[in-house]
Image 1 (cartoon, rainbow, N blue to C red):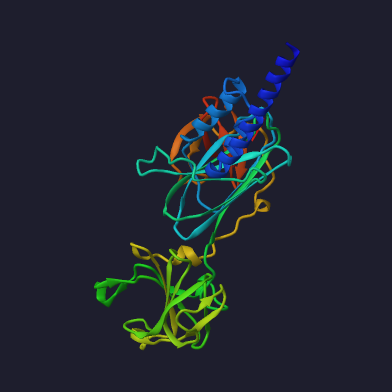
Image 2 (cartoon, one colour):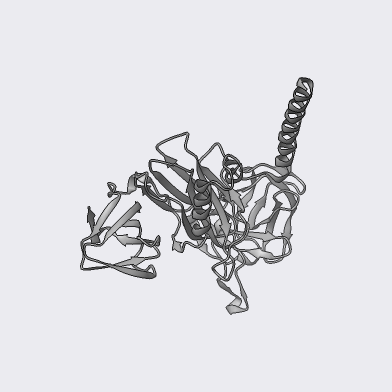
Length: 377
């Protein structure tokens, strides 16, 4: 009998080890998100887990709309439900950066990005999540559209969450020593009296200014032809974007060359149909099967936002000091009005951004209220 027990114990141990190894192999294939890995720590019938999962599902319906860059300084209160969804626009070619900062290194925060479908309600499956070991998320935008970021702390989280969202260009700038201010003609501008539209941006610089590779890649064409005059075409990767440099004064790279970001390809000029204009680079980006796309998000450096720009924090509980105060979907007076509150109404504050408080009502609705209309409770 004792031998049988030992046998069964060994068998169970072997099965457990085997299951763990199978899960490891499966994880390599499925690449589970930080949220999925964390969920394995809790029984599915646990009430804490059910509440946590329910908070996430409700956040998918949150209608807060923000513009990037965005910074929110969190309020420290362990009794709050911090799971929030933020909606915003992203443009193809930009790189989304999200940073969540907390009081504690050991308490995880889950950042999940979803794309919003055209009906404005339904969302895709999670398209990007933060790494389990960090509170940061980075996403290369491939489709212009509206997105939803759900920020959710771990079960039992205490403290505050400071949040920063901003975009950076996914390409370097194509003219050495220049920046966005040198662009004087944009995508879609009329050409030839309206017969066609501009399929790129024009970056003005002195003749002979170096034109550089904005990405690592391979030069697929160099030559002097058509409207673009002296030109270089660069391909990023095997199936990546084709990058077009036109009106060059000189070409300094050979067809078929492999280049690194920052390598000189040619010099600014006004060849082709730019003979009557000041020297400039026509810069274009082409996507497989779609033709020319707006190159500006690929090279435009967005405005910066810093947590230090937000004034001193407001308190976890505030009271409405104005006779009537509007609640808005966005932290701006142009934001859609979603309700009103009356003098002496009490609100729970989740955080604040510039001159606006991010509040939660008793019914769970989240909104923004101008800070001039509230006072500490």
